[in-house]
Length: 291
Image (cartoon, rainbow, N blue to C red; front, side):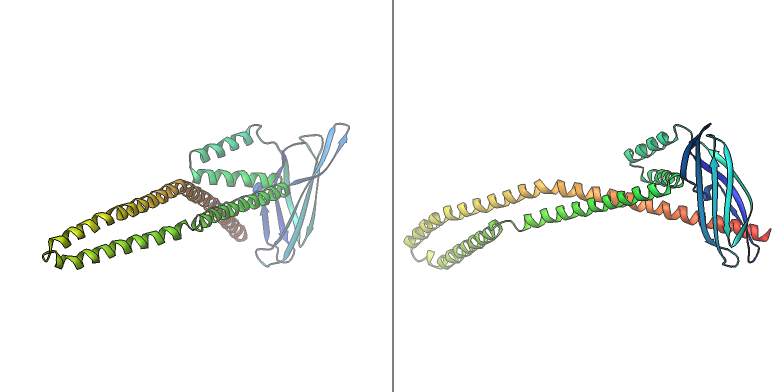
């Protein structure tokens, strides 16, 4: 069994007589059946096409069948047409270079490792298109499953990150206790300031009162100092907790940014490839209509 069938075909609309052309890139033959015969394996390839006439809108349905027997030789061809008539067709057995897939894989990995996302997206689109032409149904299924797995992983990562962040914010009463402690410390400092201010006017009246005030001040200072140490310890612990999580969050954000950029680049290449193919088909159709 060879790698596939390639070829060209020309058909004419039954309603308006406009000619249509199919090139190598338009055919996606699938191997439908195979059986062993005297000179090896016989394989049936088929390709079906449904479209409208570019001139009058007539519905056109075509089916091409190619039998390969023995391996590497086209034994017989057949076509079934509705809404059009096949004028000419030419098919050949296609054999891909043996190392082509390995070279494409190396190219994909190399561009990704070097963070050349544009080159990776272009190579990925080429690889996907070739795979789809060779095996449309398996390629479509694998692509859908891979997209589903990637989307699920992304959603799970976002959910886990958000859950961890929420748990850090909802951590115990340590935050409320810290706030309460800060308020008490502020109140003590304010009370001390008011107390000292109220006594300043009495300092000149009596030295004994000054001594008493100094004694009270010396008694209050250890309390203020102790409270300040607690506040410093609280802020130090907060800083440590913040530094533990900041690099994880930055890494997740960086990974999400790279993944989003990669997905956007791949989508851009798919859209560009689609527009380019559509533009070429329009140009060819216009030129052939003029002919």
